[in-house]
Length: 160
Image (cartoon, rainbow, N blue to C red; front, side, top):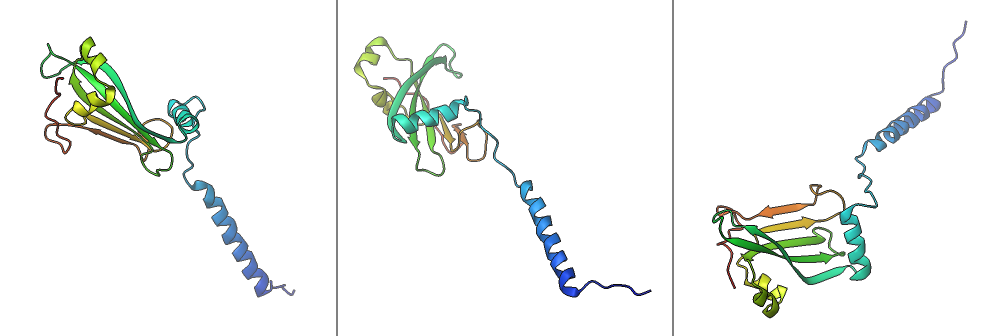
């Protein structure tokens, strides 16, 4: 009995097709970005800033909560926050800076703007950076907290 042999070009074509199919099967193994819920807070914030402020927010200051000083429990401090957003940035689109000042009296709240209060603080106690919407802690997110031994050393809050 005579055996029939496959022609060499047909065998080579089959090997190439098998290799291409193998690479195509490996393609889905890439890490896909997680689907972000339309109700995600950061997604909604980014959309609001894109539509309302044309993708750029600067000079936005807001007073935060009053809290007890961990070093001196009988002293009350207050957070003052500065927010920045720039849609064009590839890294750190949304940034939030937090400073501590002594608790403000009603007269001080009338006499000073939030920007003046922020500038009166010594240094940022905390910094947050967010590149993409979604839960905090993804690649590209940044959180820095000042410590006496750290690079963002702060001397403590000032009073007005």
